[in-house]
Image (cartoon, rainbow, N blue to C red; front, side, top):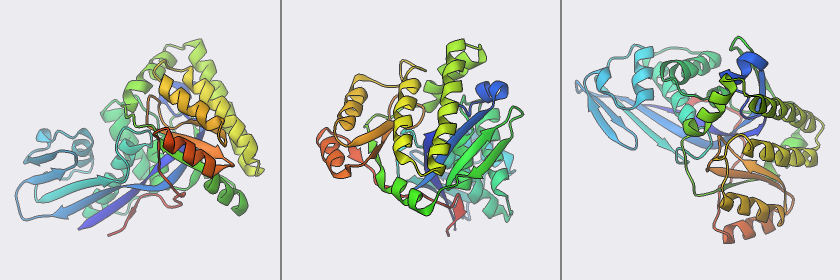
Length: 325
């Protein structure tokens, strides 16, 4: 049995500039961080002539065309693996549709496991590029490249998205003290809402392709905020990063009417009045997790818990996708 593990992520700056509709014209930049919450993929060779696939559903198939799960189907096609004598199962620490990059993390974990099954030695960059090919080229999802690369590489990582599609990956330069302080003061809370990232991102993608001036200006500014966050991190100025988070959230909400809702706005305001210095929604928007930077963590935890939010405690994950069994 082969077991692959790939990490989920939080974005720390510049989110949204990793979509081709933006970076092919303007280049993108963001900072992403892998966390110690994972998607697990199990691949097991069997004696049967069919393939058994288990996720939120269960499938038994004898041909690739029968496979309903689009990512699994396309990954098997890409790696030329026939649908027989194999069992594929997936599990996750966090539900899908909650803004932590679960779909691409699944793709990366699946590819890592299938390459191991074939006996391939595959580079981290190849893994990320294959995941992008499956999701963005073959399945035509209107998404960016952040999630595939951070799931493959792990760590706290800066990404430059070039006009030709190349992604330059570089670890964020942080002192140990800044890293520990950042990890200790970031809190992640589940809103209780889940949504499809593709639905939210489709509007941004469409407007960017149409050269909508307000959308392009918004993303230009968010990219600059990402670069400012990088500078703040490198200088150990986490108070400045917290302020940038707030500005980022205000600009993020302007990109789509479905980005937030009255309840999330209420929670955000409550957090800012009770210990949070900065905060924003993680992911494409519309639900999922809210991330806060807080000095008074005890107070913030108590207030948001009483307001109905569930905290998910996390640490940064410095390794990307890997085989663990």
